[in-house]
Image (spheres, rainbow over the protein chains, first blue to last red):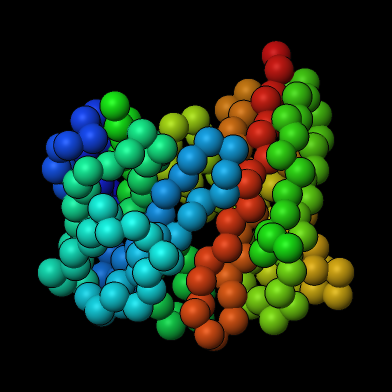
Length: 114
Length: 111
């Protein structure tokens, strides 16, 4: 079983749709993240949850709504997205506070907004 | 100023060549340093951490120069399978504790 599983792998949605991305980590980590990766740009941090409490929200538009019911699961709810939101969305987890803390990523969701 | 800067490349090298990537970071108080590898349309995967004394993993050698705020990755005897984008990642200070990513350096190894 892979460490961080993310679904779906691909998603095409219209601007009026509502969809959700799902992420689950099996590593016993205490922090989970959502990142956005657009072409030719570095990964952009969207949200951080530490022990299921949101600790960072990097000025993300409200059409992206995260949910973290427990420290193993993370969702990103999407509604009324714009074409410029098309990107690769990556979930990650880490053992925050550990001396050798590293990020582990899920396989990503390639999102296309039409 | 960007937190992490990398030469985007692309680097096109023949099989068997040695290639080096460089990265600079802006926050002198940064604590942890990594190289990740990302294949096209896939997730980044940890290649190696970078330690102050330098470290090696097979054909890969990473170096850190704290005084110059500079990180490097050397790949010896390049293989076709090394073709990917290499991301330099720096972990911030205690405040925020964020991971900062470079834009990545693209490598293509040519037969």
